[in-house]
Image (cartoon, rainbow, N blue to C red; front, side):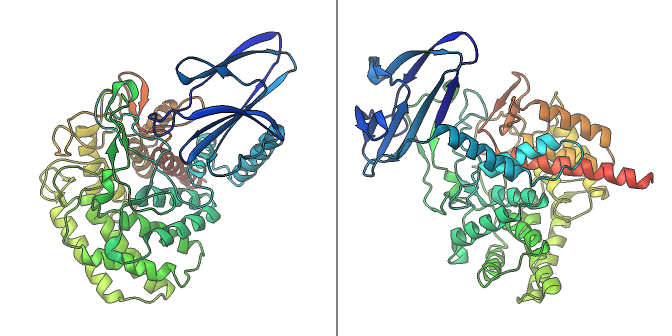
Length: 502
């Protein structure tokens, strides 16, 4: 971490405080001053971890194992602070040329973002969202984390606090789609290679999420010594959802890989056999109930969205054989696909309320039903989809016009009722409106959602409309990738309108 302080005019007295704690705040490191070829530095060590501070004026030992210091910055002066993390058994990293590093960093991101081609409206927001998604991608492994934070509360003072510093197959696949849509194929290939390594092996062992390098053991534990953000306990490390079965993830992965194939990227000796394994996983779990996209911690059910995504996975397999000549039991896959479609229309749609439902045979709705037309299960303007949208508007829109995931008071998700609207769900609604001619409503909702971002255009997972503040882990890949989809839908509608008027 680098901080550069530049004096512009006058004179300012700066104060610095350094309090280093390792092990999520439990371990106080041993700190000492050292001299090397780059000058004086503070070195903090505890077990395998070490941190070194290099600065123009190091702080002195202060109370409670802290280090404090003051220095004046006058016009024309520059002070640099560098905080390096490294393994304690290794040699300390050399000092950086901060000016050169800043220029190189700026040059890299400017060059990367220059590949984005303006689409019309919302270009600033889309470009920023693409940058966020790239920043959430690990430089060496290609793994895409859902968010870089843990335990920022979805409900202030409540227990809906999760660790999002892992790679969900669903979130990563949807991120891949968003980046491919705007020409970033190299990143897509990078992620595909991560995926192939992470899920390689017996298809029975497929998980919904992995560590950044493909780690499988993500045991959830509570850090009871930490009070949590605004008293929102517990603080969690790891995520128990890793042990859940969520039937939809196979669909998101197969759809993303199909779009990569449609863009001319050839399958290799590893990628297509692995997709066949994913389809085998669908076959082996075709009768299995699941926890759903929202990771319900209650009983498993037949979630309509999950069943549709299993249909989408089989559809991708059938098309891969029929349109690209890849090998596979296309007849069996088509039979499973068609059977799922019939089942979903019979059991996932409630004609009494004229809507698809969250689970088979139920009456509750779920914002994830907006994904059905996105994967081609039905058209956006199909009467059954439009009926579902009407039901969602009736049951899940809050007073501010944002869409809830589902009614927590009516669904057994294993937690106390109450949460704020998910940003992604409302962006899905923008896309649905834009695809069905409700342009004015789509723009109004889109502008409202964008307005909830901070001054850097970053979005969290949820938004608390009563307190006017973001909630949940931040910045959230899911929020930014659905922003991109919503903007694409609005821009597509604008182009279609322009074409229609000549």
